Length: 199
Image (cartoon, rainbow, N blue to C red; front, side, top):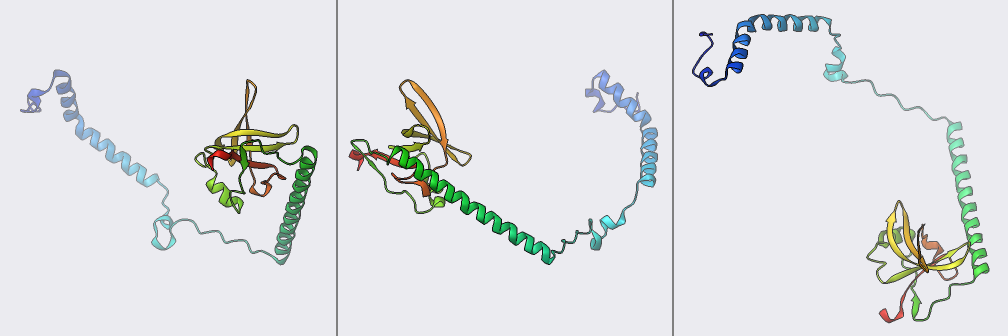
């Protein structure tokens, strides 16, 4: 113990001092075990020089598959089918809107309110401006397929849709709408109104 006790050791507690003495007495044996373990690991480890070679780092990139003429024709045909289906969906939606308007009629503006002009020329422009601040002082009138026109107030935007609050008597419900700008108008699916006195 005298060999390991120094001026620094005088400030150590008995437990710490005993532990330090054990380390000092066996450090040569421990070092020899560590050296042997490292040598054993180095001899057993699989060497892969290609991974460390500057000119051959990593795996070879896979070559892109070459498209044949048949693949090109098949892809073009698929795109044509998708366009055709999209056009049919638009025509179908247009017919549905016309049927709803014919069933429930055009939107009748409440007294003291006015319908705003289309807020944007394109749907992309509309998505950029449709925020809570824009809806301040405005209301949505939406055409439903089961009960006609109904008014609501804006609540929030969620996953590409817009949530509105509908109040019927004491009952409050929330519904999501896509609000495609192409469907805007008193002969469409939705309009935005505001108090005429705010003009």
